Structure formats: C-alpha cells, structure tokens
Amino acid sequence: MVLCDSQTEAEQAQVNLQQFLSVRGLKLSEEKTRIVHLSEGFDFLGFKIRHYPSRTARTGWKLLIKPAQKRVSTFREKLRQTFKRLQGSNAMSLIKVLNPMIRGWANYSRGVASSKTFAKLGYSIFWKLRRWISKTHPNQSYGWRDRRYWREHPAYPGSRWSFVDQDTGMVLYHMGSTRIQRHVLIQGDASPDNSDLRDYLGHRNQQKESKLHSDFLS
Image (cartoon, rainbow, N blue to C red; front, side, top):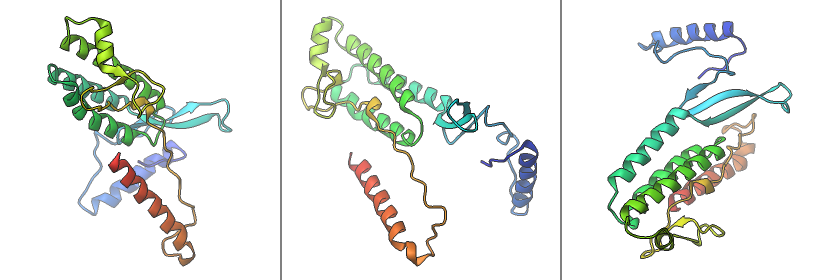
C-alpha cells in the first residue's frame, strides 16, 4: 500500500516499485495492483480504507478504516454454516465452537472503526440463536425456551439476553461488548538505537506483551 499526493506521483511510484522488484526476480500483480482515490477507498488485509466527507475536519475529509464488506460477508456465511452443522447439538457444544470464532474475529477488528459492524453482527448472531433454539425445541413454548437459554450472566451485567448453558454456566461471547482499542503511535523521533529512549521503548514492549497475554487468557 503506497499513499501519494497525486495520481501522477502514484503512477511514478508504481514504476519505481516495478523496477525495484524486477532486479529481484519479482513483479507486481496486474490483477491486484491498481491506483484509486481515497474517496473511493480500497480493501487491504480485510479492512476498508477510505476518506469520508466531514464537516468538522479541517480538510473536509476524515479517514476511516472499517472491516471490509467482503470479510464481513465471509464471516456471516461461516456463522451460517456453523449453525447449520451444529443443529441438534447442545448449548455447550455450540458455545465451545462459536466463542473462538466470534472472539477471534472481533479481536482482529477492534483496532479500527468496528463498533457498528460489531453491533450488526451481534444482532445477527442473536437471531441465529433464536432460530437454533426453536429448531432444537420445536414443541416447547417461547417462554420455556427463553427461561432455559437466556439470562443475565456475571460476564455481561445488566443484560438478560446472554446465551447460557445452564449445566456448565458457559456463556456465548457478546461481540457487541468488544471495546475498540486504538493503536498508540510510537513517537516520531524514537529509535531503538537511542539509549535515552530505552525506558520508553521497554515500557511499550511490556504493555504489548501484557496485553497479548491478557487476550490469550480471556
């Protein structure tokens, strides 16, 4: 991904890159390489990067990075296939399979503007669960189904719509509860070769390792 100030500059950058790669026996993919304006946006590593009009920004534009629609659609289809495959299983089996899927997708996306996407996917998962319950217990009343599977759970206080396995207490992860965590940019003049910044860089690494460990345990 190369960002330039003009189309002319972008075209020259493409030529320079091709020259750089050719002496190494490589070349740019014609199918995957294109030049677009940021107002149109482009997908990169599963994210949509695009300029949006903004009345509050000094330039009149605001850059937002969101989960790409193709990636969202792929995840929806994966959920659909998972519910279909697990129809007839119990709640514990369903939660064990879905939790890593939902949490992993959300963790990968939480560093960008994903709140609305999380809310929409959470809503979709909720209704998939309702249909799964109806098919699992077709002869039971709606009240019975709600009492069996939906309740308030300590992991999500204040919400009585947590999908819980009553035998084990396992709860399905709430995608909508995922907090957006912006990446903190490193200081522009910071270098690992600068001994005066050893404490600063060491503290950043400690925070990163601690966060990764916390995510692994959760």
